[in-house]
Image (cartoon, rainbow, N blue to C red):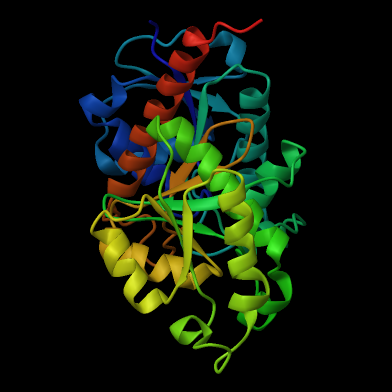
Length: 339
């Protein structure tokens, strides 16, 4: 079986994306696990390679059809021609527009089946906005390109998997955005995606929105109004979902392996415990898309960009998971015997 083709987007050129990509692919075990294409800018990658004393040749090519995947060489789909003296460490319209181009090109290649998975380096939401791209993050860009609203964000690490019902929204709006349908959809997508990944029915726990799961309505009624009914809907579909559980104890049990994933009501409810436990090895996975997409679980780290001190552990894990998911997808297609 041939190795999967993995597209890696360079992320914001002014951030640590180029550095962590090179550090990750500089590891023989990582580089040899698949066939890689970096969607980015050769000038910026060569600049970072020189700083890191990176020995593997970086070869720019204009389009994917020209990729040859030679051994011990990394090919770059050269989508922009940025000034190699581009400033590090701040959001700019030029870098925001460039990062959008990398995402779009890689995603479209995945949609067309030219690559088996996409791994994304961090982007700056502020830079995207400066460039006129009004998206709150990668997930929303990819969902639009894939023409779907049936998706969910999962953060996964060695100790914990969390899936979010709401993502990049003000905390004050969370109760207004939640509903029986939203919670059920998130549970369903989690079940469908992890069933394929794990090869069995996942055990899903659902977190409450309010302290002590509302304490019988004393601290809020969202649990009774739509979280518990959504869990009952899931149960009627044969999904192993339980809750709602108070988050202050739920994440302890989930981290001990009692559950395969926790469905969370809002961004920080899930990301605080995930990053506390798995900060260096967390991976962002977009569930529900027709393509495989993983990402680092950190940002552009403008404060250390260009200094050569960024930790590539999350990028290594994102690549590892993308390769594993791509291989499992190929295997499932090979095993399919339907008409």
